[in-house]
Each structure stands twice: as C-alpha cells, then as structure tokens.
Length: 141
Image (cartoon, rainbow, N blue to C red; front, side):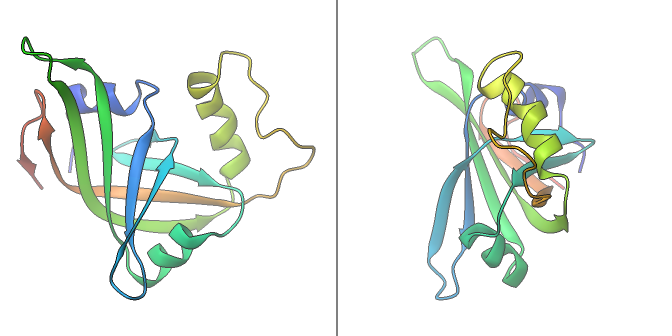
C-alpha cells in the first residue's frame, strides 16, 4: 500500500515508534524503535537478534504506532498506527542506524558507537492498513 505524504512525514519526524510483535504464547511484545522509509516499506535496524526478530521470523504480523508532532485544536496529539507484515533481511543494520541517528540523535552523530559493528538485520514492514488520529485517518490496503 502507498503511504500518504502526511503519514510519511510522521514516520520521518524523529519521533520514536512502538513496534508490537506477537510472542510464542500469543501475548504482545512491544518495543521502542527508530524507523525510516524505503519506498513504501518502514525499515528498522537491529544489530543482533532479539525477541522482536525471533517473533517476526515466527509470525510476521506487526503493528507500529508513532505519536505525531502535531495535534488538533483541543490539544489532542495526532498519532499514526500502521498494521502490516514484517520480514527480516540479513545485513544493512549499521548503515541504516547511521542514517537514522542523524534524525534521532543529532546531525553528525556517529552510531553505532563501536568499531566494526555486526551486519545485523533489517526489519522491513509492509503496511496493510494505516489508521490513527490525523489526516491519514483510516486507509485500507
């Protein structure tokens, strides 16, 4: 599904995202992640396998939420929710994290803060539904 410009702006705003995956026992697993875009996929870098990587390998259904920097006239913050499927690709994490660090830490930030970081993993989320409170409203793929 094509991500509208209003939702792309939130994803690229530097706000932290909350990624929900599904644990083996069916309970939710939620973590905070840095996010970027590659076309209409949302991308997340991981240097090492962790619970979210294991969960996605077993069950690719995910949800992401991001609080928007904007709100309405009543003081309610806008937020974006993306529901979709994720896949793990080998490598690319250091390069992606360096790029995202410019937004999440500061321009010129050196991240990951280690010599020769592992290639890691790239999580690619393909949206199926975009919803929330804001100009993106509810969009079905």
